[in-house]
Image (cartoon, rainbow, N blue to C red):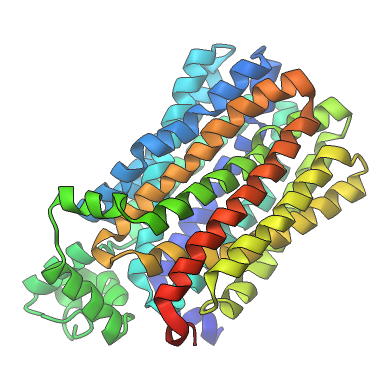
Length: 442
């Protein structure tokens, strides 16, 4: 309990928001492909529709990150979940109209680029560098707990009334928007700095009486930061503020970040096939839909129970080895999905993949916060959404590939993407490890 209480209360507010938002999403998103197939959408068209969301993530990702730096984390989060809820209502009544479905999926993807980078940046704001990995792990635990509960409820809803799942998911998203508006404090450094300057304070960690001016919750945020982290942010605001053009140019010329993003593009392209084409592959091979729900729940259970211990153990370790070798477990899991038919062996395949997921995630979440300048953190988080392009490429390719060669070819492609992504993550992570040096990993 003492360990859990050591995190700022706003971290737990964000974790709760992630859990509820993700529950609503995972009740329906894993079955979206089945829903569209059942209303008459062809495999090739289905892949293009599913690819609309990641294209939106790429197009709007940088904008969402920039808005979270400029407007603050909170309004961008509210905008994201509200628009996502409205798009889910649209799915419920779209019917067999691929263009309308693609527009809705594009909208749903766009709104995720607002909520996710803003939430990641807020967690980075709230915690000193040495605790960020653990805060991200808590948020990921909430997401994976939802990933365990949502699909199980989704199976029952999908088999009885597919529309009901979309409506309930939309209501969950709208509820989270209201919750953030009422409960979650603003944490963007520029907004906190303005509040503290208005209170006559010059250092973020020197805040006696600040609560009277910016509220107890803002004081809760800044009071938890150590002096070094506070000086980093204050100095960044005072001395490192750069014109927009030079900031974007700096990021565009960041070769390490570009290679890292390319690696994550391949990884996300492969991983997303679990939600989009694995249920179709199971239906094609005669595997019961409840087996699909069971392997998603297993994935969630492993991630919930193993993520925090691994993140604590690897919070100061080298990034490259874990980021790379964990993708070998991804490849093994995807090969199992391609060729195995027994429910027990499919569960074993997901067990292997899930262990690779928590192993890699423990270090991957550290890369951007440790790599980016704090003043550009929101932009880096937003631009990292370019990796969603992997989903935009993989889904259409999988649709046509499945129609031509079956589900086995789709998951052979996923295994190849995992290996290629692991190589790129190793190269970029190795450069970041050298930059950080032995002292930073102690």
